[in-house]
View 1 (tube, rainbow, N blue to C red):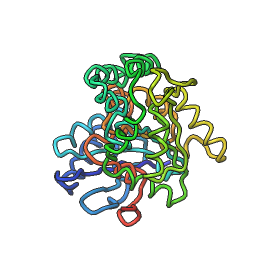
View 2 (view 1 turned 45 degrees about the vertical axis):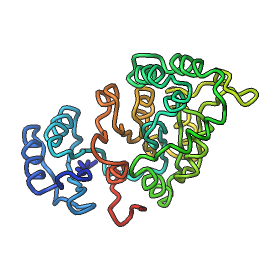
View 3 (view 1 turned 180 degrees about the vertical axis):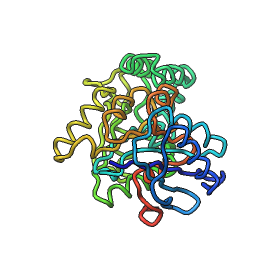
Length: 299
């Protein structure tokens, strides 16, 4: 099976050049590897595929990532077979949207810094996700439910989010938003971006105020993998047909279980375990990583 390495330049930074490709080929030589055939441009100057005859290992990916960091170019690798995935599972907070919803809700209670610190611990894997969720939601007890709508109005999509979802959907993929956040937000964001299905946690609300509780069961890292397995089974797919993307520690099991898992603006725990990460580019980089070319991307 042949493999492919994809380089993707980021907005406002140097293009991918012949010099980059030449240096990459030199680095491959240190690992007794070489490219097969000519570079294939997916988007001239922006994204290019380089075919390999063997699978690139972690040490090589780290080497390439370090070399390309000076020009803010992202690098991805994977097999050429079954490259375009038929199932997308995406995290919401800090991935499809730019914010962490609980942190934004907390601003209305004057607790943003306190709750954001707990969120950071959980996303970096230093605090159990369910424990952190209960702790943060508990601090919001009594907050008016109307603040949910105000928070939603101020949410911003991450650059390229809608292009990622609608392009994969257009080409036949089932797109699922699966979040440790809340269904109030996942439903609205899913509709806005083109996801076919969405899943999240449910906030307890009584008399138009948050009760400080989460309605069980908790959607955590294990639940994300369960949804991946459920959709692959229901759709008659294999795990290799799936593409997953997320940013935090609770996304790692899902990213590892998918046919291709990509960390987006990854927390350190994710960057340490996942080779394919988007550090500099927008979410359209996840499309180039699957071999889509510029003309195929929905803008």
